[in-house]
Image (cartoon, rainbow, N blue to C red):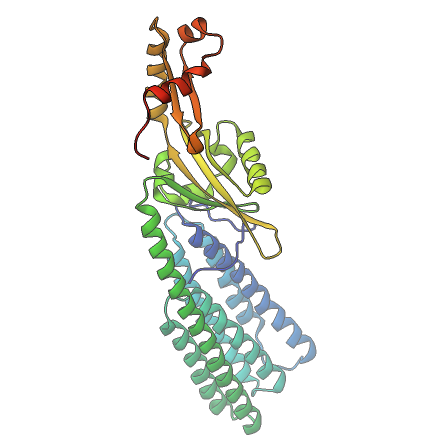
Length: 370
């Protein structure tokens, strides 16, 4: 399951081959590992303080709690991937739940212990759901907790009212949370299908497409965008500093300012660079994306590589400057207007103001078609 949170700094993965979702998910799982260790030690200390005669071996609690930091350390070992960590972490949750049910059963399911078990069980079902790829693992964990609690209560001869109430609350929590997780799975599948359709469309485009946000930088790019800048994958684009993609980083700031003021910019010539320093010339267009409150949420844009075209144009311009005759280039625009795009040095020398050539040539050689 994709993680809706970004944990950027505390426990970053060392392996930069992780995708964005895997990197965020791994950090989230590591954070939960620390929370699990603190929770085990904290609950034991509280119960020992209020119930000195309770059955709760310190050595057993320390042994169970030590498994969490051990897993955290192992996660940095070479070859440990996101899926491996999630699988081992889930097994560790089974161990922790088994140990907690055993302690609660040894203490005859007293109200304080029963309440702790209910809260921890409900939390762990949600944790399993966050990292699950299918409902099977969620149902297995939820069912395991209820069945083991029932067996523990029968073995301990717990008070029937407390025992029945605990089982009823656990089953209710399991059903409610399973339904919630299932709904999240359904929504996630829909979003993934839409995302795949969008990815197929954008990946078939020859121009680069991207989205950036003020807080996170580039959050989406298609394969064409990554290829033209020389990145090995789209994930590498998402991890880079957006300003580093520009030969002159101030250009990015100017384009963002223009987009905020005017709502968009179109066909702006920019010099971009890849991770190896190779440069390209592109035509960039973009629009600003605003929220319902009018605040800027992001920028959607496209990039067309015109490096080869610029090289050809420069060679032609150099050739035109060497011709002694009158050489110029103009284009007809909408509304009967025209634009002078190139004037050779010999033309400028022969006429201080060659702009009269435009309407003269249009009248003599009218352009046809669109």
